[in-house]
Image (tube, rainbow, N blue to C red; front, side):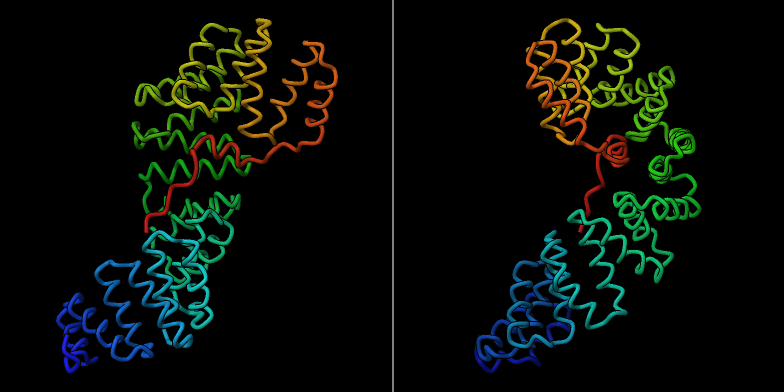
Length: 360
């Protein structure tokens, strides 16, 4: 491009036409002519971002910041570019800087909260998104991410308030009923949680995981017949639902139906090898059948999946005692004594499978 054409005025003329590619080319030429022009790099970044070229845009913003750290709006633009790339961790620092520069920036605060959610720092996400949601109470999408953040931060009262607000806006939201149920269960209000899952199933009988979540709650309450029925409905919708198979296996085991339990548990593990309860139950059956090596392998797998749960250590302690290995048995029982039972997030993980991923 001829030097006389590499001017900010020409670039801005292309911007007014919405011709972001031509504008970016001119701004690129301007930066070559004036490599110390922070504003030109910032404008280059804006036009690259308009073309969804976020990697190149981020590089331009960083160059602008290196030349002029006080350039207005550049931290927000950099944070937004990183967020759009799905680089949530990298987005946090510039977004925090943008918020320091302008504490009233709803965009910076929302993006910061969303970025914390994206990297699984749910308590931090809830803190920022609460402020953002209060400033924009009609934004249901924002409220949903806040509610999820509260739920996974184990701030169940906060989650419940948000989900109930969502339900008031949309009473037929099966997903909101399910999440309200999870929050209620986290608060120890399992009967109310069951009612919410029942409402979800009534609103949307084919909603994924609604019947499973209901079955899981019945299982917790040892209402085995109700649990069987709900889990069977989930399998009718999704025959490969490994966790539904696993909990059906557990129900059969505690009702003394060993062969049925084995069938369910083996099917579950053929679909997903990381279901702890299935390994515990298989180990229990093998122990009962005096298949000590097979039982040991199952219990050890359960320990690897979560070494902070005491049940597998307890079963291993009993198994080693039966095998005559007193030292190993004592070691496992010592671990049981030192472990504190994990809190209710385990139940949440089992019902929902984890928080939904963030989509930039």
